[in-house]
Length: 120
Length: 282
Image 1 (tube, rainbow over the protein chains, first blue to last red):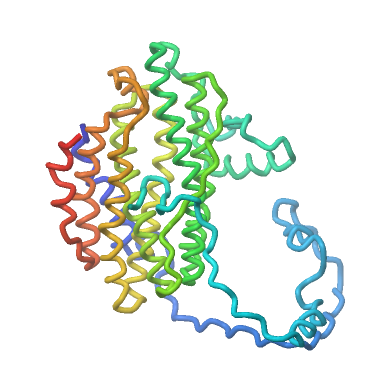
Image 2: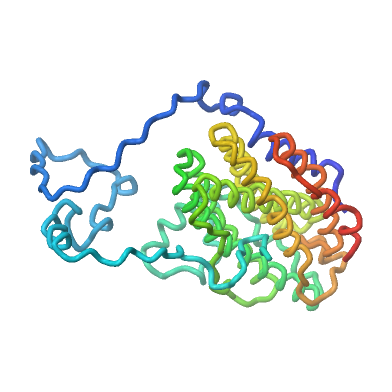
């Protein structure tokens, strides 16, 4: 049967520690940072950005495990900025039908389900 | 035994590609050494081993499902521009669940001798594109983390308390230590959302609470693998459905309801719904 101290342990380590304590009490930042206004979304443009300046020197060696696998990000081509011509062509076409509201990927069942719960 | 004693947990579940090395680095990062060779499974009767294999395989399925549960939750949190620490811990939780699934698969193999894999599955969370992103993220965090994971920590603690098999005890301890943070993640985000969100946050939380409790109760109530839970089986990390009902009822009354009330969230009839009558209905 359930040990008498289980509830108090879970209350203390989960609920109290999660919702009642401040970050400072847990070794986090002392002050809540001021709200930051998010950067506005970049406006669409067909202008090709200026070529970036060539690197002044070879980058310093980076440990293998810390290096970002650049090729993995887009192994088939360059960055999105290299594709303005495609955008122009697209804008010449008649307006397409409004995008159908798509459901994001979900499990196949008709009831929401996850580890430890099945909703009716 | 120390962290250097790490060994691949379920090598039959790996890809056979160079990714394996990086996978082991990820798994070792939070590895708790498991004394696999110390298992006392050989002392059990065949029927007892079959019962335990069925339960541990079911746990593997649940942990595997949780990988996508946290992945889908991360989508909701990202859409709501959740704080960076909430996002990183949610995504780390998914990696933790991969490790847990491997641990449970290995436990099932110990009792059955079969190198099985969990069946493919994907989690699904309530999705209403018309509601504010914060409300959806909050509601699903309550479901996944505040209610489901908090109950998981409670039942894991109680189960571990009656487990004497050293291997099962170590596995339950490893999983429990991660689940505490998975549950805490939800309570912290709930507090953050209440502090920074609009007045609709409390309403969204209050609407989700009865659904979330019912969703977990549905799992507590469902049938178990065939086989008796003998005293020997109990020492390998298993309790009866009747005991689990009492634990859920106690968790609702002593942990969940006080927690939500402390944050100003109406709890309705939660204590009555999962009170003594429900706990004794098994």
